Image (cartoon, rainbow, N blue to C red):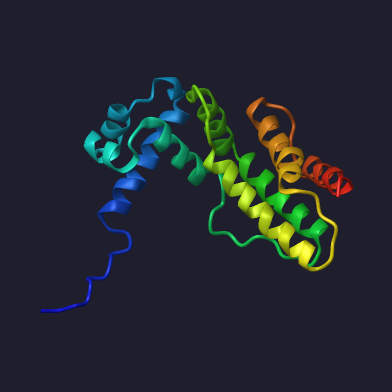
Length: 186
């Protein structure tokens, strides 16, 4: 009898279901159906059984949160490491603004916002907090003065997302000004 565990197949059935469900949610959001999304509707669009979605995500809010994190953060990308906090935050803010101002991301972010009745936690926000913490910790280790994680979130990230959701102008120049302002708080 073998004591080895079978290797997991990357990209197996679970990944295919996840990708189909993510795609279905994105399509429904893009079609302006955010306020009418249900698990059976997503399952039908994804070509999976609703039970698969309930088993994996439990409820619609959990599913939407996970899809939002995947759609609205660049998980897996290397954070900037320029050697200075100003450089790191400036490069990161440019990455974020370039990402969330893509038309499909903008539509998704707006639809996602309208689809949620309540928000108790936001994994997307926590992802950004984790990213900020890494850069701030590196800066402090170099002896640089640094704002708090909350200041970076409240004064750099939140304003950019706010501008996108409400159709206000947001670009790299605006992102740079936000970084300049938050560094003055350090």
